[in-house]
Image (tube, rainbow, N blue to C red; front, side, top):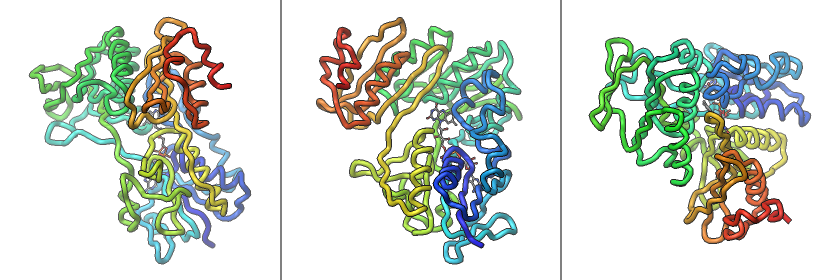
Length: 402
Ligand SMILES: Cc1cc2nc3c(=O)[nH]c(=O)nc-3n(C[C@H](O)[C@H](O)[C@H](O)COP(=O)(O)OP(=O)(O)OC[C@H]3O[C@@H](n4cnc5c(N)ncnc54)[C@H](O)[C@@H]3O)c2cc1C
């Protein structure tokens, strides 16, 4: 009997399977994940879980019994090795699993440091899954010296947690400023100052030349000539969509598995969602790495697998926690030409509004839930707000929603 096979049991895979059942699909449903744990949320890995403030069970997206109770054949520790689109089977070791429809929800894989500069030494870690973070946690100790490579969200969150755990932290960012790829200079400035206030030795425009050590890392040489003694290295230099299997399957790739607005690939029986998928957006194609996208796109794919034919209209938002700062982002800032800064009501609270001409594109809100909420509602509704009104602290933000 064939049914639906979901490859990858992360945020998107679990959401897709759950939505299929919630919408009445009662056929065979198999959710396959190569990790040991049942589907879990990744954001706390670089935040409360690494800090030791969140127990393992709270990471799980649903109770373990959920899958059996809902007739979802969840296979953990199980990797899909190949997909044969002519026979419509997924190959898992010696098993061939027939499918009527199949979804790729394979996520993303972290970029690693090249072996030639010490990337394979012990004590050098990426932060993508539970195993990575459990290994880091086992090596963290108060007073230990950690080098964080990369000043994106993962690197900055790891730096905040490491300081919280009493480590000496150096962070290097090769680009001119932290968060350069994703945020305006004003937002970079906010987080640069925040980390320095908390004692991070944050260096921008400085790269890693090489790590040193016999089998385990013991030091690093930076491009500015600095030599560091180290106990631990955390690498946060971005991810690439997990497309190896899709490529071997013969699917079209374009910065991820290329899907149409319904989440379908060029093979009418195969779909994709989450970090691994790129989809049409505003005349181009984008791929988003966020929880909200993974859930929304996966749920849309589930509905479309059942015949809905609904197009994807992403409502983009993201967050990051560092020390006592909550950053909330609404919208996508691509193509902005100016920033409007709006001070918040309390110390450390501020929002940065991205505009292209008079069109509002995105908002970064630091400890300012109201600015985030208003910005998100405007952006989701395809509306803008007069930049002068935003810049004026006397403007009542909620009034802009009327
Ligand atoms: C440390 C960290 C912090 C983050 N913080 C935030 C945040 O604050 N806010 C936010 O919005 N987003 C955050 N993200 C991003 C967010 O977690 C991802 O966008 C989301 O998990 C994507 O879901 P996904 O299902 O597409 O991929 P994943 O959750 O990565 O799941 C994919 C799964 O598929 C498995 N898989 C791959 N290939 C195979 C195969 N062949 N066979 C079987 N299984 C396979 C993988 O092992 C993985 O378990 C964070 C990510 C990380 C790593």
